Length: 603
Image 1 (tube, rainbow, N blue to C red):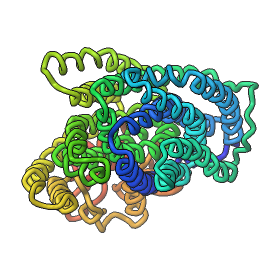
Image 2 (cartoon, rainbow, N blue to C red):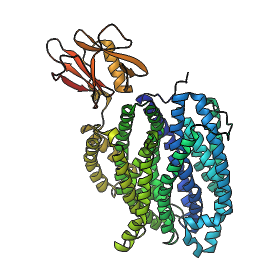
Image 3 (cartoon, helix red, strand yellow):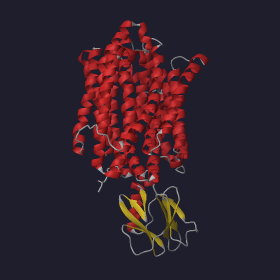
Image 4 (cartoon, rainbow, N blue to C red):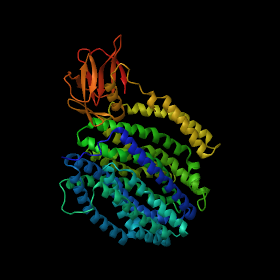
């Protein structure tokens, strides 16, 4: 009998997982911030920093292409599906088959990068050919960093397997090793070759940190080359993912190439501003999707698309609540943010202004970038990977024409590069949202976004007025409180005390199951429901609906399929009673009284 999968988790557990990942990512972003501050103070924004950033761009582009952007999108759903259908032993066999293919691919790729280092530098920053010393330095650093791709990809693969088994904290924390290694190398003497060596070493340390947890989970690290029945489907999905993510990385590559043509420092401005945008990308979108993907994959594998829609709805509400104010704040407070992070040592006021100009444009892309990160893996979990691929192809096809229009038609400078990113990724986000319209229909997301936008108006006005007059941290604190209060007043933030209580005349067991359904969700399980992993019957007793853990001799309540927000209906009067319950896309009623509209109370 297949083992019970840890992907069958309640919403509360999913929120706890997302919170744990967010904590780990916050620590990672803080160490990353310290890394960027120290690196900028020592190397500034010039030829050496450009050479390192260009060399690092090669493995980072391929990491997004092979590891985080493709492997996790494909492996986690396949692993969860195999666990649900065949058990954990079959899933580990699949993981071993994938590991064998991955080791061969990564070994070959590392050799190709080492041998063709100069060519890869030209791909990222062709304008370096005008400065032979800069090109030679970037080529040497690329050779130092070529094994970094293999280690990062293995770490991402092992992290994906741990996530599929419900273990999130260790792989999220392992990512901090890169920042700590770069900090140590910078403080050890400020030699850029030492920094590159520390970067490469950190990737292998990340792999080693994941090994004990994977071993404890049951994986025995025995790569095989015999194949697996699910491997063919995975490779087809992986090919689709490679095309989709590859076009995204090609778009970023276009930005890097174009930025390098503007002279020393501009590439560093571009990448430095994008690292700031990665704060909400990692803390919010990355944390949410890492916790979301295993659960949606398991629900989709069981055919519970309504349950998957509920989980996705909760995720998108949390995403909007946190990312929208972050995007507005990055745009309005760009210069004080960049000055606070980078402006010290060799990074001067001119560098701050140049990077802040880039950040203002990237702020327009922030919501689309984060939404793209959340929604693309959902399509793989639902077995529909083609739409994200075609949208990415369309985005990269329009990238260069948009940049040419902005630079030559409108007359913009290098800030046209992040603005083009905002335009293309926003179009992709709209297309992805449209592709999930059947799953998300009737869940009130557009109205929820409208309330958040209204809540942002006073926050934006205060940020604009206060930014020149107060310290950045004071401005951020005041705006956070103001936005939270406005969102709460508009009903976008619902505290537990604000939720309607189950009326006192509902019996204790029914009240207990309704509360668990509110917190943990419910799924259909003919002829009743599953709440918190327990089978529950919806029956009629004394003309009222009651929820019972086991089937009884009482008649089952009538039900129809009806999508909508969960809740319950009360018949008021001298003898009030519970006469309707809507859970898991079903409306349960007591029969003859169903046509009479009860007083409806949402959960």
